[in-house]
Image (cartoon, rainbow, N blue to C red; front, side, top):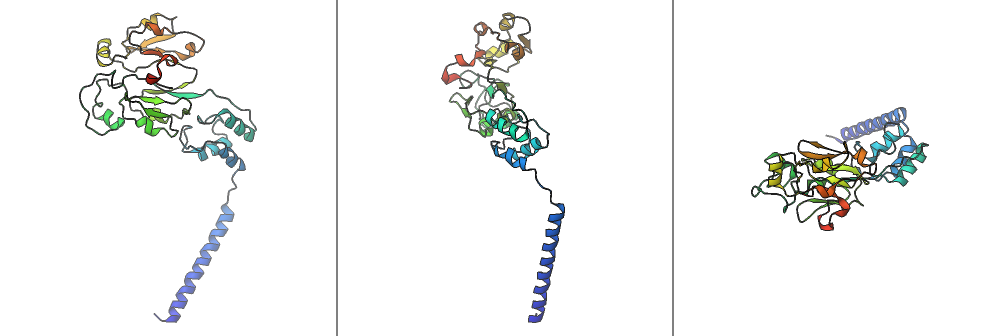
Length: 277
């Protein structure tokens, strides 16, 4: 190829590049949509965790949805009251204060408390163990102990205890719900900070089976249910359950009647055994 041909090719490519650049500039100006400046202001007051606890992909999507009136300003479980007040001020709304929500572990069946069926040699992952037979514990409803919930926590609010149960740091927990979604056994629940009494078991086996597989299991005896006014507690599938709408009205629950200590008050649990400290 001679120099003239090379020159013509370079000029052609340069001309095409200039044409395309001009076209993009025109399109950008023609189709430009100005972003509401409040979106950036709201985003500045969000934690930036992108944890998905609000149900959206990240803080940017949540900020956009707030400005467009698609979600409530208190929809972020990670925000504190000061952040909510700042966002409300940006939006010209009244601040909505919310009670702190904390994740709670509804199982006390660690290495010591649970009966074992043998050594588990599979993938060291809760979901994998759940699918392939349930790990090494006889209880098919309790914690598997591989810490998938801990790995899912973006706030370093969880750790595995030496007894093989997840511990939750209530001060760090934001109630984002990632650990709840990560648990294949559904033993982690979100509760208002004011809720402190729990049936810390999810075993629905018969009373005889429950006694054989875990010394801290709810055995469905019903003593706690019969010890309170009607409706405050119920028995469902061999498992005692608390109606927190009634319990929240200053009622006391008969924790001393539980022979296996499945019904617990978190403040009364020794620090080394606490489900949430």
